[in-house]
Length: 309
Image (cartoon, rainbow, N blue to C red; front, side, top):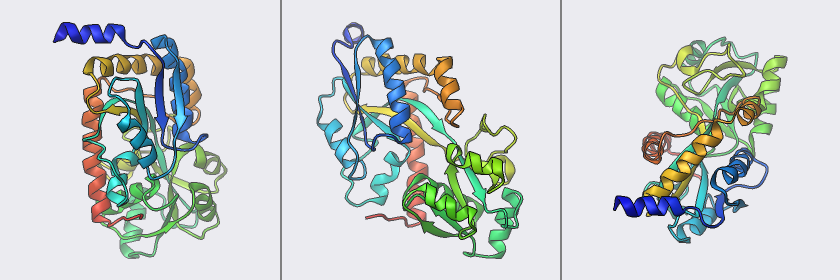
């Protein structure tokens, strides 16, 4: 069995690989994935093609990858929403943990908690205290029901024991405009989008959602440090394969991803955008991470009764 596995890994890859992105071209997941794929070609000695198949709340991309042979030549690029989309959308036709297996994470994208400067809270602790005094009065925006910022805010509310009012938008940009204009109180937003407005003073940043501080905002504490211990809600990007893909191939691709994210030029480029490139130590580690994240976020979805049909 071991010799056969080694032979499979040594022969891989013998033809081009395909990475399917379940989102339109130009977004964060597409951008990071294309940069990773370009350098994977150098590691693997074969073309790595990226194809966008957006729509259907992951269903279109998932159906394509799930029907491809489990031979290690077709992969799905994912973000955190892959794990909880089936709990939110009744039309979802896949089980992220049964139908797929992890290869590796390749990016972690911190979000920031930003508030309008008129909100009388200078810290996460003060914001929580304010929300407890004014149940449901504070409003927060998101890119839409079930998007990362919505889930981050609901997790925040559940852990803090507070009630806030959700105002969904069609994208983070119009939500941020309304935070700046004072029409809503706050937003969980990606660092790259909010950074110019943080620097200009148009919004006040109270914390970052990752377990470690952002390198582009080193003086801003994590939400956990600032008053809500244990809180973490990072957006991640990674690769999964169809269940049944040979473990030796998963290991080979994981090694290639780890080599790519260590490239300093790539690190520096994305660091300036508030994106941290980081790889999983093994496919098993990433699979275990997906299981833990799924359990965490599906509980949030159910407790907050989030539906988006």
